Length: 360
Image (cartoon, rainbow, N blue to C red; front, side, top):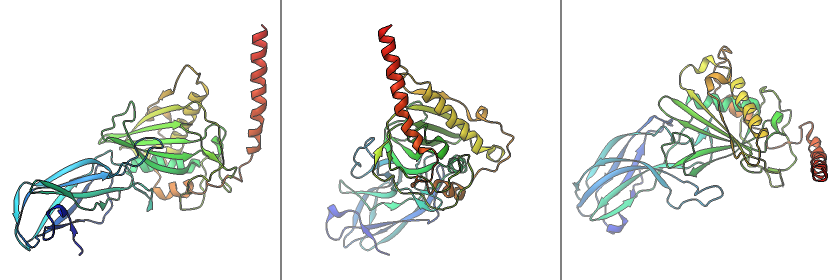
């Protein structure tokens, strides 16, 4: 075991510490168990307090830079003052409850690029130092898997999963940041949106789902998914595509928001593919109804009324989600992309209408 020196400010001979976690991944709302192992240095040391901190690397905002040192989003005090004698070995076990709103770091074994960690804070002689964070792996809850699996079967593909500093308006968010999962549109919706942004905020009673269409323009390389289904059929492949390749940027459109609430209970009694598809259709309808004065359109549709509950489909696992979220980085095979050129004709019709109105 290699111990990590914490109190470097105390100089040579200070105590060293290591945080050892159980290696099982955790889910939002779960617990992490482990122990802090302290080893006395060449001289005795009075420890003022010992604490654990949950930290995350978070962007300052859209396109913002990563905040140096990360953001502390939970803290557990392990002990008050005590004396650590020369060469003394002391192990302190702990159980750390993970907040419900903790973001996901992994889907079906594949990392999302989100960095979370548990680090020790040790104070002595008026100085505080932090150990190197121990990586924390967070996997989805069943309700998150259900929604992600449905999006995968519909043909949406992953672009990125970032942490954004700030509050997601109109939600019960409890942490100082939220996770935004950015998705390429499913083939059947390629003409209706440039990008879908998804935020999943879990709590003890259920989950808030926030969908936003056309939040930003998406780099478009003219590629398409090989043999993608337009109606939620299964596709092969078990990995996420990489970020969209540089190229022409699809024109941005008015943003539309959809908010839905789902419960942790009864997941197996709902047709998640149909239900999530109804959310997307409502989102597109809201975007279509958008006017320059309207701002973002809010579609408050509760999950219980968005679709029937008699479908009987078992909530999808992440294997299904990955099998369908993969493969959309290449868009060459989509029929009808040439039809995008016809939008120029629509612009001409619009301009002609303005001229007639002016003459009238």
